[in-house]
Image (cartoon, helix red, strand yellow):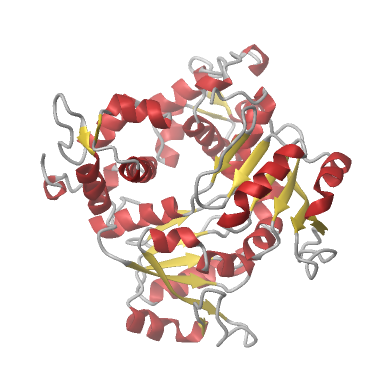
Length: 222
Length: 222
């Protein structure tokens, strides 16, 4: 098996759909590992989790030769490699911009910590909120302290959870504070400077997929 | 162009990844329409929105013949057809289970209404919350009234935004009330009865995709 260090340094060719699928594979492997499964073929992985075997092989082959002829994939090894490819082999430190309902919900979202993301602080402009903290103890800081806190807390990622009309302004402050990776929950297009990666989360997409099943009559075969 | 009524009735063969892509195409077409674009080829659509042209053609061909030789797709027509395929040609009525931070954030999420989803009510068990409403005016009802409200308000979809330990119990009550389509924000696996579609939203996947870009050095080519 090659190490992922030999992978092609071609971030720009790896679409967001691919990285999303890598995350999905990682989740499947975590489930398999806790079920005590040691090896699995792409075919079995696809069948068990309703994925596409050819797509799995293609996605993984892009980063190295992880499969072993006659065996398939070693679950533990592939999981470790995927975590490394996804940059999850170190803790990532996250700030949440906006301490409204969404910001507070995200600050306490249990999935983040489990996967190695640490929500370090929230930022807001409302005096009534600054100095308070979320239920799980994430402090709400003054937005005017952003640059200082980002440097002191070594924050890697900002999550934008402010109303649409403030999103562009907050994005600019986040970028000025030196953050290069942003998860945006605010609807509407943002003007993103070069060298900064913004991932937009649109919760409506999930509802539309349910709408599809309702329209077709629900029967997804499992 | 065929009408989507002639499409194959094969829900079980259409993966969630496909319906997610249809949602993405719909968003692209909406942008093109507001920019005044009348026709577009799969190639141009792919280039403009960083998608895959062959995938677009394959996904759409599954539901009918929407492309016109030498023209490509008519933006308005394809948009209308996609809305119909996704079941978005009628308003869908949504209940949010749980009036915590996440439930309140979802009840007021501006994207839902824009795409034709109406958040009709929230449900909670806490006396202090029942009778109150979200900032945008969605009422918080008593969970014990679920069956009655679902029938009266003709609710199509439930969104589960309760803590993990209550999720299975709430799911069962939602199903008992006759709801067949559920969006679940609660982490962990749920036991889903046949004939019910649950879509799990895992917000961690989006953060992992950012982590990937940080790990590779951000340069996504645009």
